[in-house]
Length: 119
Image (cartoon, rainbow, N blue to C red; front, side):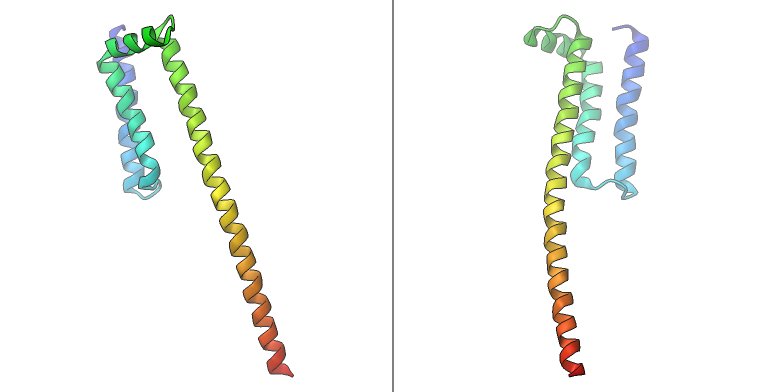
């Protein structure tokens, strides 16, 4: 890998890592979600420093170029992120439905109490 590409990829990996740490520090990103992004930054840094590992993985999966391997892993990563968010959205949808039902029950009980007091 040419030195310019190595320096650029290393800078990107370190920037991702530091950006995620800063977002957690400012409470814009919860710790439970940060681990995946921190692992991504670390993965980029490891593959840049240990390029032979990327070449080995490329050979193991039968790809022709290391960039193909990176693209494949990038696609898998994005699919896993989409799946994770779909699971979270499904859980939150159920939670919102339950909360709306509980609120409707409480409101009905309150209205019933008001009608009893007026009678």
